[in-house]
Image (cartoon, rainbow, N blue to C red; front, side, top):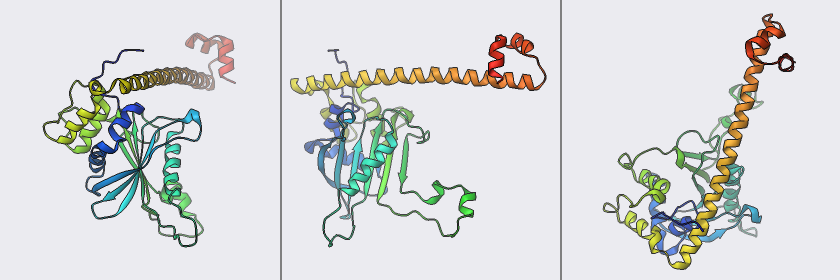
Length: 303
């Protein structure tokens, strides 16, 4: 088992994620984070875990998902679902699990009138996902038709109508931590400080802002590796080993994909050049001399 050098747990391990956000006695940390995330929109004053841990339907898709009932300062309630694990088709899976949180609120019988609490999915990502853009935070809600149809298609719809958002009952917040590039000194807002810590805490020898806010002092205490019990330390080291192995595997797959894409790009570029030269009247022999390709390769690219 490899030795561990981190002062604070890695929040992208299952153990670290649970340690920070999945315990009843530290739910103040989760309330602080969510209030920072939704600052200016609502204030969460209390929460409870509906299911401490939901597991995907197949063993090879095992993942930790928290469903949390939140009570707002004005008495309203909503459900926040939190997840931190990269999977194939991540965005589709996120939508699927968030939709299950809506479906789970269904009640049997004729008395139910399909009222349900809003559901917000919050996703910590130590990776970037195509389609989410280049900002570290991407918020999505129930979309309108403009997202599905071009302007021309909308103009030729049989029935014209005003296009407005449909509902405010489903929202997804993606936090792409690799896109967050602010330094400690540049972090001003609470959410910037939280995201900075989630991205860097396993690399830090001390957490900043602990003298300014007791929440960060509590985070430092809860996440300190030296404070783990011997049993928890064994579990964490195994979690860390799995996390690092997966990271190495994903990196190797990424590099292989880049190489394959580069080779395909070079071939496509060469094909365009050969085609252009041929259309301008160059012979196969002249193209071969100019490009360094064999005559057979020129003819193959020119087919």
